[in-house]
Image 1 (cartoon, one colour):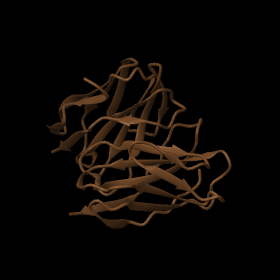
Image 2 (image 1 turned 135 degrees about the horizontal axis):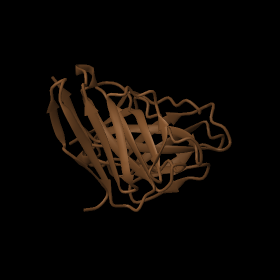
Image 3 (image 1 turned 90 degrees about the vertical axis):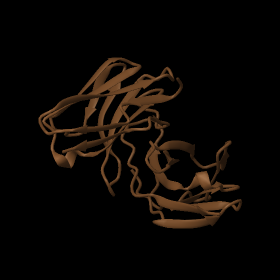
Image 4 (image 1 turned 120 degrees about the horizontal axis):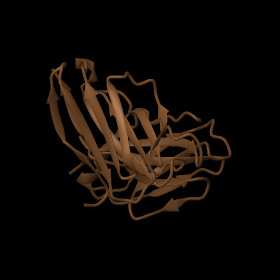
Length: 111
Length: 113
């Protein structure tokens, strides 16, 4: 599986867009990009995933560069409840079931 | 109840005790997982069940014993644990074992004294 690199921490002002980057320069053609987040003392929460097209759902948008070597998770209007650790994971869509969460990015939304 | 539930939410046990963690999913999924999250370490996958059958055991010590009586319920039986086993134990489920869209429960915070 491709390795991912994320900044350890980021701050974002409440109401502004939070843009969380992820580098995955060794991603292969059949690997998807998944994003999860973990709010303090809770279980991880699935956010979104994509292959090469940009994706949007009710929680976030996922922008994947054309060469697929990096991606950005966008929370369009961050709230205090979005403070969490965000994990970028690269895996084949159908395969062995071990999701490697890594250390993620700790996003702090500031009032 | 919706989603994935876990009981108890907090557990303190001595090293000679026997206790069990329970997980229940109300999503109609066929795959269930146990993860361990120790302080300042990434989540570690412990066990995977697919249609009640164990498909993966990530070199977990025998003092942790999983049980999956049906696709909706998963247990983790604990005995003679060590203080280093203190951690957040998370249960998750997915529609199929190959699907990486997993839904997690709130976890059980375990402290071994």
